[in-house]
Length: 498
Ligand code: PHE
Ligand code: NA
Image (cartoon, rainbow, N blue to C red; front, side):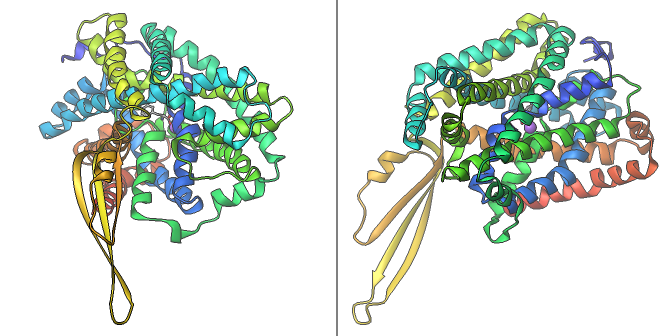
């Protein structure tokens, strides 16, 4: 596209609006829903430390690179990357970064809206007083009943997508800016309130230790891949959301402090969310590794036990909805901005993007019920135990078969030879989208962005755009973007996939 598209979407009122909007994009389900449950699944402390390291060595440098590209290009990530690749004589491959990002955006928005739908349901569930005095069984049954009702999930997914579309359609200035100005401060207020409560629970010290005492024996290469993927997911990186927002940032603002502020706030919210959730988990003898249901299966018990719990619980889930809402808006922005640049009205572009993501989201709705057994990347492991007739010694061997796609129940029911046992592990449609976006596409986008800014743009043009005041900080960042971030992402990728 031609350069005359630059700036058609408007510019934020100030640097502060960018900080608010980027924080609104970053802080979301990733912090409140995903961070606690993957931390629980990956054993706590050591995983948290890896996540923090990934934020520092890959997240912050790539975020800076992404905002810089967005502000220099001043268009949707697709057109920005095409223009940047051309202007800097980079291989055509790099102009595809924007496209890959828009595709991941569709994938992410599709399941993000489904999970956000659960949080909408919980606003209603909490407010109804359903959880007053609730036991673990009741909380689990209530969550199970929600997941088992595809029509309900579809309705909630639809409602959330409509809410998202409504704000996006109003445009960058009146939609995004006004909503984040109001929503972000409210969110911080409520988190502080809840943290105050969790400090008073008997499990606070145990929750703290779970998050901050590092036990490296629990860390696997898979955990490290998840930590890296989450660093990208939580900071909205590698898919163009932050690049799109960077395009609306005022030119005179310096990038360094701004980006550090956003990354700091996002990390703070995740850690505070962990400090709210794990003390409650431990105070009630609950299971940290309960998976995507963690906050939904554990928090209601705590809220149910609390005086005023109905109110606090309702407030908490309103908070989560708000956080998810301001993130969802940004997930769609790269594709919407691209469509607007191609002549669609903002309303039509929004409708098209949200409708496609909504349609794809049906696959995630069904992943938790009717399609739960239809899985991808299925590993079937057959373990054989042979008992030596004379010594009585048992020897075990196992063999794995990989299926690109399988019905796991049908697979489990296939007849087995004597003395063998089968275990089947795969990914539902939802798991698959979550995996390929956070753990593959976003880090891949990040590597390309870092290499592009580090190796294909001249030092002078990068310095002029970044306006980082301290030459030392600028040099450190450029070194990170050229060497450290690409190497770190590459090593973790290769380790994790082998
Ligand atoms: N960062 C958001 C969160 O933590 C999710 C997100 C991903 C937003 C990608 C925009 C782009 O919930
Ligand atoms: Na986040």
